[in-house]
Image (cartoon, rainbow, N blue to C red):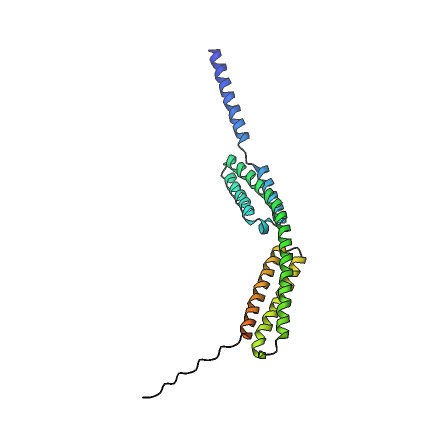
Length: 202
């Protein structure tokens, strides 16, 4: 009888201890969530949202889902997603630095090409003497707009905004190319109007 009593007490104690252990293990992954959040902010500072947008968005999505699962007390899944978010954010920060440097080089080359094409356009405009002034005004306005945009692109590049500089330089190239085509169309000789056919009356 006494043995059964002690056995029952031991069983209850063991179950209580097991419950405590389970509860202690099943806790919100606060550390992992904080580390993931810090990694995402570091990636944002590295401009991963500009230079590695897809991977950065995945990290953000993982963290958001991890926080939702943590609130729902699904701690295991929350921890896994928080760790995934941190890993992706860390990778995004590294890739952002690499891609930013590549974009700097690409923008620099594009700016040089845009400046060269704009100089050629202005040279053609200044050399043109036959086209009427009224027809040349839109051409000159387009060239001036391209010049202003190129100045903005160079400013962006100097300020370290290499993606903006690259995009703006591409816009300059398109505007210059379109204006060159418009100027070429004005300079092209006009085809003579066809003569009206005259038939003899019978």
